[in-house]
Length: 482
Image (cartoon, rainbow, N blue to C red; front, side, top):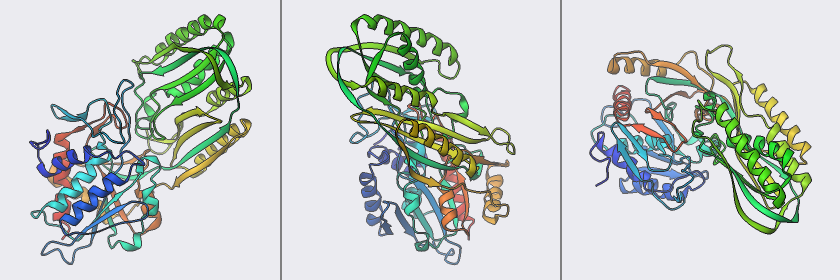
């Protein structure tokens, strides 16, 4: 018996725990797809898996609902994989180690995957029930949402009958989301060359940052470890010349990088200067980011000595220049919706290895021209470094629909069961509704979700009581859709 089986809704909680035991980080599609297909087959439900590894499971209407409109419920199967720097957890083969603290479910030393295991658990529990009244249901479980809404781009809406869609991928039960920013995920490449260099090898690290979701948390003022590393390296280079051996920073395009590590080779006579500058920069940065990132640490540790294959002086400087010039964070706030981030960019990962520097970024904007402006700026920065920017995915904004009967019905149901008005909100985070509405303009969508805190962080946690309320809400929407 799992640790969540004692909580209601029992079956949904059990399924959430089952999913947590299956490695399902972005890019690792097959284990979760096999689970979903077997789940449907074991229950005799119509289902299929498309070329994007999206899984669609269909359940026909219960008696009395045969003439009701089909409803699509949708979420994604992948999770963001972040762990503590000390953890040896392997997201490719290990199941999450869940824990409960009062009202909160968490995972030890890793992200929880509540984004979007919540949706999958709710959908499957509804499919598994014989007691929930509902119209024909099309459960759409998309792949690789967290690395650019990849699966959603493959979904063929001509195979779906539903034109009412409930997306369960928001992180606040008190609001119904009705619009989101568009986005672009890019991978930039810049060539580097190497030469044999002798000296002491040191690893400079920026760690202890909170990080977080690059859409939902970009307005919190949190530091990006890749950007801070560029600043540290630039200061060190002024007093202790070095050559870069390697860099590894961040964990995903849509995660604010919470750590970065750079190995450098330096002459023995300059190692003390390197340490002094690193220590001084640590003090400066800790002071600057004391409120948003109180656990920030900057350190230098000697890792060896001898002859290594390091970047040339010119390309070491190139890497530093790119890190120093690259835009990061909020670029514009909305003038129409107070407090809404309009345009932002996040350098999710930065790696220097072999013969290239590779940067993966996520750009978000509800204004297409501002997104294009950022892409142009990146193109010019990479061109100076002899590199280029490649677009991995590009999705449009989900525009607010002024007239939506389905949305109004869901608002009325929310008021009836909770006794209060839900907030109607837009999000700077990307939602697959933008792609879906682009492919099916007659689609009527809402997005809802369970209270999640610290999404895309190792402190991620999910409220049990909120899960219970959203479960009740979804079931009531289905019951009243006769």
